[in-house]
Length: 427
Image (cartoon, rainbow, N blue to C red; front, side):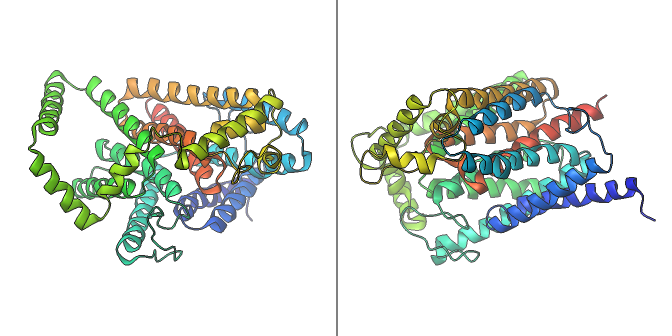
């Protein structure tokens, strides 16, 4: 006879397996995301129905330092749903999206409860990344990816993702996570670390080839953050080595003969076919009077007008695509604003935006406080990736794309799980 404890034990294992399959399927199978998320959620709720209790909200949720911030975020989303301009859509979005994403966060914290399970998750991420790297290579050199059949065009290098910007958002999290794994002791195998270092170089080249300027900005800032904390926590000898290398690189950049620079650029253009376009994309960053930047600013203005008309609780969760039609101001307008934060302020009001930003602040505060005590570079890599993603989200609607919003909550949950695991082992 199977007892309740046995069922809870089996359910826990299946939920963990679902979390592994979820992160594996995320880059190429939306159906897989939905299937494994809902199956895991059903079993997670079934555990509680059988009597399982955790540490917060009468034992219903794992206890974390972010629960209060998440509680405020959920409360504001409830208000946005109640006062929505399209109540049915908001209700569907609240239960079918917001609560589902938060369930992923809490399930990860609950089931990643040992170093062995954390390693399994990281190995799954590594396997997935290698798989997608081969797919991206296929698209880059054969002209089509072998998973989804997406064709390579001038600005559409996205591997199995539909858009290059989505691939870039995935890459900036994976690259910094790989750096965190390489510099930590969680996977001590030196050969594997060398392979991961090579993968970081290849992924960085792929990131450049996406031509996604927002991702570049986020990635650079996240790398600077990681470098700052590496140097700050290093010994004086290591700091001098870092300084020497930085000075050498600066001198090389400033005094390298122009003929050599041109030869390098020509070689990159011939072999990789993207150097010249990268320069062009960088040059267009400050341009706001024409092209995609002008269109983006016009869309931002539409979102701001919606926020002005619905300042506190917004027009309603999950209603932007409907409401924005009434604010269309140019040909091509009335669509998503390519800015996750402006869309959030339009849908959930300034209260919703403030609640989410408070959650992000508490997340980084908790993570950096933990890193300063533990020097856990795996967590630093996760924090850097989420920082890069958060910056990139200012230029795109990643928090409203199924694959990418699931990636966000998954990595946030994995970060908190790694922190809790390390803290419990050190008690």
